[in-house]
Amino acid sequence: MAKIKSSFFCQNCGAESAKWIGKCPSCGEWNTYVEELIHKEESGRGGWKEGLSKVKRVVSPKKLKEIDFEQQPRIITNDVELDRVLGGGIVQGSLVLIGGEPGIGKSTLMLQIALTLSALKVLYVSGEESESQIKMRAERMDVHSDNCYVLSETNTQNIFEQINLLSPEILVIDSIQTLHSKYVESAAGSVSQVRECTAELMRFAKETGTPVFLIGHITKDGSIAGPKVLEHMVDTVLQFEGDRHLSYRILRTSKNRFGSTNELGIYEMRSEGLRQVSNPSEILLTQREEILNGVAIGAMMEGNRPLLIEIQSLVSPATYGTPQRSSTGFDAKRLNMLLAVLEKRGGMRLGQQDVFLNVAGGLRVDDPALDLAVCASLISSYEDNPVPNDLCFAGEVGLGGEIRAVHRVENRIAEAEKLGFKRIMVSKYAVKGLDLDKYKIKILPVTKLDEMYQVLFSI
Image (tube, rainbow, N blue to C red):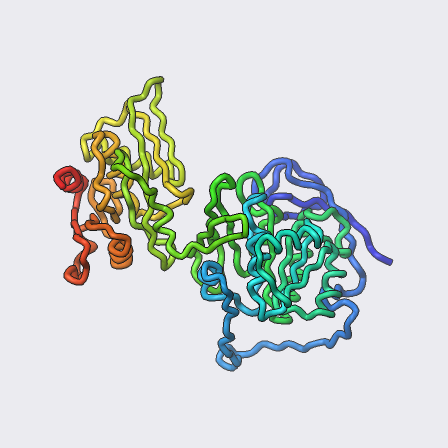
């Protein structure tokens, strides 16, 4: 007879307790424990192999040098942005989690990838939409495939029965919070259900070598809903970001066991689906007819990709009491540090000025190489003197007002030259050892903020 018991789980981190407690000892959150019924079978769980003959394997430890290893080729898709973010393609047997806000385009992205992989048998499992709704979205994309199968189901045991019959080469789950397993007697989306369903899919992916994509919801603070252990179980965690009122979307990696975590892919949302943006620097630079004050172009790196983005700032006298310090897409603490450096080392009086900073295009950036562009933008707005539109910046600003070198400056210079900029300002220490004759763009080396100020307004 089945043994039934109840337990309390933290809805934030997944910690388990025999009784209700107010504060979670693991994550420190208050009032997050919820009682859930747990149903444990006396026999071992079959998971995705339930109903099939089971062969007991005897596993023994091996020496590392005795393990046979063959480099398995990755699955290359028609989506260059996704391949870059995953580290070069889809790894066989990998478990990929994609999170994002409601309506940002997660389902559209995965359905588009499932349709474009026409040479592979793809099973798209949806627990949120009916088959007719998915068909409507596919018709809007105008992409056709004979190997894309759709299943509208939430029970994991029924899903695995269809998987055993179909034997797909790629599996897409939309979404993991809608699935429920008969081994856990709690509501779909609870901590225990999400953990159990993910564990069953992970066993399926690893034992069959089938890539599995999981779509996950996020909470109000931007983290993926469910226990934190969910992100530890999967191989790759992707964040699909962007403003729903803007057309551009960013696919960012926060965890990747098979590649870099600094890559990003950029898409444009259109009525017929998502379009890959091959040259994001062009869309991140606002097309303007006249030179504006407070605008500077900075060269940053995201993984192996150089990007040129536009920094906009507005410095105006404070009207009411304490001056405001507001930034969009840029770290507010780093902005306060740069303002202090400009006031102490540059002689600017910013104590009674409101400062607003914006990164154009909806990007969130954290590259220190943008410090120089931020300072140039602030100086331009403060002095009411525009920065020349053929000049860009790449350098880190230290607390002493010195301009520090940044890594991979060659890629930044080449990107600026490709986009038609005539001059780029970098740290003097970054150009040591560089062959400046091979660049058509003029390189302006500086060592301190006052040199940047003099060069900026003497051009």
